[in-house]
Length: 202
Image (cartoon, rainbow, N blue to C red; front, side, top):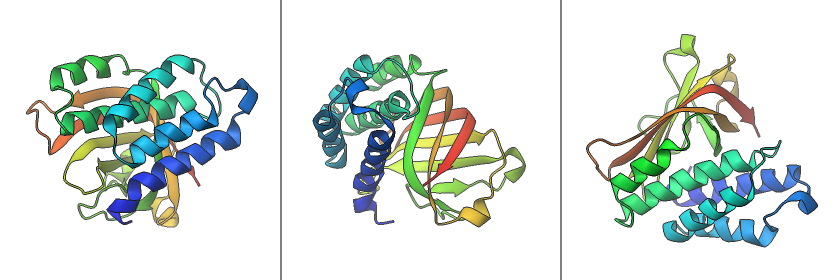
């Protein structure tokens, strides 16, 4: 997938899924507010993306089938990494905020499944260690100049990657650990480890 289209694609798909599953009258966040967040992330406006996702996480307190809280946690982390990349947040603050997310559910954006990523970004990549049923994503910014997060997911159930190659899917699960880069580099900012993982095909 073209890197330039990646951010728009993934967050709009997340939005569609949210609205398809969530009763509007029960949502403390309006459709206009969701769109404001998605537009900020699409345009890589990390300050607004971070502020809005943090604000919405306080409003949406109960998890539901739409996985709104789990998706917001990802948007929060992703925009925080963006702020670090742009020198608008330091690693000390990043390390403090990620501690609160360990042990909680997270849902990643929809991405295409690929058997051999060859160093490509923003794909769900099959792991050669198939016995452990693991997958990973190198989540980058649009230009591919920084890996905001290496995302490692250990799936609960077996998944046929070969059969589903090319399809779009959403990964999710429980955050086992989040490790900011100890070298404090802008080339790679975070490593996110997820257990009890699931993969939902689009």
